[in-house]
Image (cartoon, rainbow, N blue to C red; front, side, top):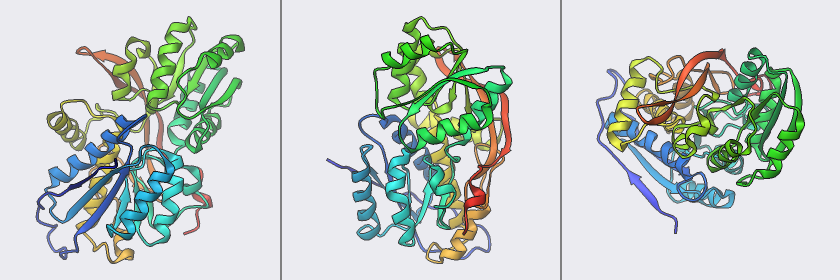
Length: 378
């Protein structure tokens, strides 16, 4: 049974001189059950924390569970646009669901703010003035991993990812900045949990390192099986396979692994400190990358609401483009295709106070933008 959650809170005074705008209704479609539920829960919780901290009574959020199924996501989006009359949609974690929902949403004149999924098709020729990715472009963290692998001196990496849009973007991004030889390249089944065959191929490949993108439960399964396999190769990946919730399930098998992210809890700025402390106080756990992206998305939306009426699409779009909010990442701006320009860091998995987590050990890419912006004609 699908469940919906309507959330409202009270509002701080608008910025001095700003006109009182119409209330904004947001439809959040995200994954709250089944495989990958922890990613959607963190997305929702980060978004709602920002709304609560702002005390905004002019922002209503309706939350629905897409069950990680494209057909369910489409049904929910249609209901939210046509029956719920939302102004903005957000929340989708998975790129195949985003591809099913975003184009029809923006075609109907609604805004879509992506908290996570950002496939290359929507960054280039499929871009739209009403679509903003607040997270990254799918290739970006993988490009950073490729750059790190090159700098680390790896010359024969074995790479694997699930066979769906984000998986294809992942391996494309890694190869773009890696530049070395590949010992093997595999696309696994989305949702796969048994990696015996892939580990056998890695063992026989002559690889000097492994890069993998397997988010959620897929990454947990792979890392545990890898740890038991006896293979002892350096592992590199994006944050999605080494995020806060995943690490507790993986345990010691992840210690020391280098992974890439545009956010971590130890980024030193006031917005990030307030977010990490507020999230722990509200939910009793450390935040993840997904929570950070949800939090930034809500604050971007609130910043636009303070400047323009959502019913005036041109003015509201211009307010979103300004990205006039304090990001937990520090520096943040949008490129011409409404995708972020930002730093991407190298993190190392550590154990701190009995909790598995990440610390930043370097910067992989500075002020990094995606390669698809040149194809975007808005």
